[in-house]
Amino acid sequence: MVLEQSSEHPSEKCNWQKETKARPIANQQSISGEDIHVSDDVMQQRSSNGMRALILVGGYGTRLRPLTLSRPKPLVEFANKPMLFHQIEALVKINVRQVILAVSYRAETMEQELKEKADKLGVELIFSHESTPLGTAGPLALAKDILVSTSDQPFFVLNSDIICDYPFKELLEFHKHHGKEGTIVVTKVEEPSKYGVVSYKENGEIKEFIEKPIEFVSNKINAGIYILNTSVLKRIELRPMSIEKEIFPHMAKEGELYAMELQGYWMDVGQPKDFLTGMCMYLNNLRLKKPEKLSSHVNVEGNVLIDPTAKIGNNCRIGPNVTVGPGVVIHDGCCIKRTTILKNAVIKEHSWLDRCIIGWKSIVGRWVRMENTTVLGEDVIVKDELYINGGQVLPHKSITDSVIEPQIIM
Image (cartoon, helix red, strand yellow):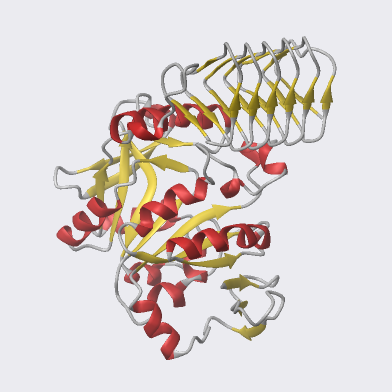
């Protein structure tokens, strides 16, 4: 199902499109105003199918280029699974049966790839397409009729770049316990001066939000995961709005917003350096909670995740903190650590990789050394015996000379 904002001003018009098995996605029905009508029987079916969530997917994924030049950011594999499905699988476990994806870029590409996987999980994906970016609050207004339907159940909202041990069950229980309009998850950081921090009472009631404080006020920041009552939608207009700056401060002043501290790891993996840091955290969490998922291959050291279809040569040293995707081939004598290797990539003999992301179908030649958050886009070829230091290589390029200083290679 697709909910689509028209190309006109977002407050003036929006289009509603429902995909069925009998109709191609191109068939649309346009209606004006915000009174998007959905039949009562459809609404009833939705309300009986569990809770809802809205994921703020966003646009071009520029921070994660060159990977997002080939695939929408939510489809980039994090630990051998599309980033989005780490969140969706966690939501399904607490009976979320409808997930709205707020997107402004390449919605059809995402729909084609995600639909089959969503069907297996028993969750309905609804694509809410913004022709004009609506920020972090406007997408809730665009999806208002779905979020409200015939039920007053609260709904989850989360940013698509967030990786953590999602506390949805605890968040729901805490939210119901205090009985106010909204709850946000907060996480502890070492350098709060880089962020806007959240100050709250011992019972969780938020007192205020403080942007990049000079003096220490709090070390808790907004973790990008919320649960909100449907009454919050009355506060939001169908226009570009920031939920963090235009909605939450007013709720806090009225005593309607609470904070729940996240226990465990957290990372925004929307850019390469943080992607690799988040991968390390994720693998460490697997070691603690599901160690059987990690590889016990003879050439592995530390926390390593290897797809069963990958092939590892002799005398390699893989790890710590490596994920190896499906169809990957690693030839003899390679040393790889703190690196993600995506589907169908090839690493040839005796290459050394540290803090790298190797894009789909890329080929790294023999005796290559790459480090310092080097990212290869899709289908990149690195010739033999080269050194790549922090290179960001666009898709379909062939690298024939060493890259001594970090740079974008076009």
